[in-house]
Length: 338
Ligand code: CP
Image (cartoon, helix red, strand yellow):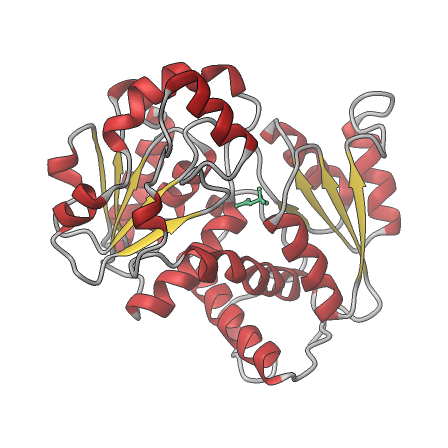
């Protein structure tokens, strides 16, 4: 990389399955590199660090941002992206994940995987012989959190000490990844959710130990009054993740008090509060699911009100754009040639 000191981190050939895989210094390096690649893209300067490479994009679940970010990042980096959807290959059905990994590793220079079981991406990484990047599993969504960190750095100017409240399903893949990544880089991460949706003990223990090393802080609470005052960032996600569609009634009952609305924004006491959401979001009735939920449960908005989503606090589309720049940095750092 020309203006980035690549000695800061040697990520070459490494996979990225969770934020546990990279150190604090390596995460900062990726965010810095993403900002640099973003400025190159805006200036129209070519940055074909993966020139001539072939990248496999495996998707068991649907995606807008992750698929498009990997595809456009490949194109900008000079690589060819090959999309392989759930009906295109035999992954785990007529061919084992291990054998599929070995075959793809002979043909491709890197593999992205989005799917259900985290064990699948671990198996791919163990047997592909090329870098494997986790584009979301039921347990983790690490590339999302790289984009979140870039967005926070752009809006607040730093990451260390930033108070981020995640409100919603505190056990989902985004919450898990924010806890791990935020703890590693010294943020003050507050998971605000009902007791029955607290993150696992294993993740809380890991994050607490990391926070002790980095000077960060971890709070897991069901009390909005403990988590939200003084927040720099409020972050939420859908209440029902992909594959859990039968849970709408239960989650609406549990999480309606944790909706990000005007009252919660005011509770932060921060006029410069940043609102983030990994998207897609249920903030109005312009989706089929939103209409179905309205018909069944009588609510017009779920995890965030349209008022907050459209407000000056909302940086959700910067955050979505930053998926591109951070995924590009990840691929360039782990697979790129200087
Ligand atoms: N945030 C996110 O992962 O979006 P997609 O599901 O559209 O990829």
